[in-house]
Length: 399
Image (cartoon, rainbow, N blue to C red; front, side):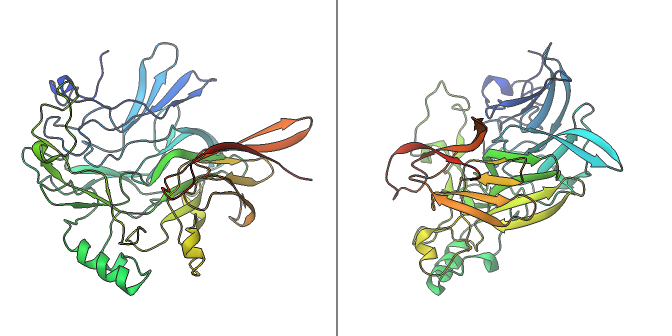
């Protein structure tokens, strides 16, 4: 293959670096014969000393000729990724009316929480994107790319920085603990590379932003929907000898002296996110304007609801399905185990039902005998306190 993550920016990196695969899947524009892929990070995810340059075509939206596999266009959303800011979900096909003209486009979002919308044929962005200077790498032997592409619209779906004043207010004790711990971290502007031997703030974090549930689209409203997380993680570059898990010599990057300290979620002493809520959102983006049509906290912690804290939001895994009748149906939330139906135009909650396990999947809707149903796969979630098990659950829509 002519192209790869190492070329043309680092001729020998392909020998040790891996990644840049389209692991979340692809989407096909059958009419045009264009296959769209969104790729993962180059590895090692958090140390780039052995893979200098932009690392094409990692972290990219790529349009391929479905007949030949020839690349038609690409856009790299993160240069020389050192934050695991890859695409966790496939792109989605949308049609947008701008200046009285319908544009067939492809939209994608990654763990940064930014949304990218491109003309399917030309690769031209429907909204301005500017290369913005970002901090240099400080780990030994690493060189960060000096700029990153930042969309002017839509707004980011998750926070891009965290300050001491944006830590949890759940209790005075939790806030005190969080401030003391936060003071030990290295903290900088967006796209600050992990520091050497010092835990470094990453916001939104290594699970996003947006996760593998991806986005959904209402063609009548021209609204794009996404459920996203709003928590904080940390990691640091460390000597490989300091890593508890030993990687085999046959694995990519195993020759490197450096690795990372782990996927460290910033939680308070009671196990809740140590940043201020909402910890998760459900957002509708009007693609005609690039602005939010509506945005609500999404997900709850039942034990916090019992204490009167109802709008905390939570992490979520799994996406939504949108019906022609104007329903946005989603499970996804990690801890409350509910399936929700929202008015897709307003974000108003219309109905919800508790599942036996978390609905960490994207629902489907189907017709049988003239009646419409919605079904979801429910299983043990990221909540380690939850009962283990799995089930398929179906509901009928209407009377």
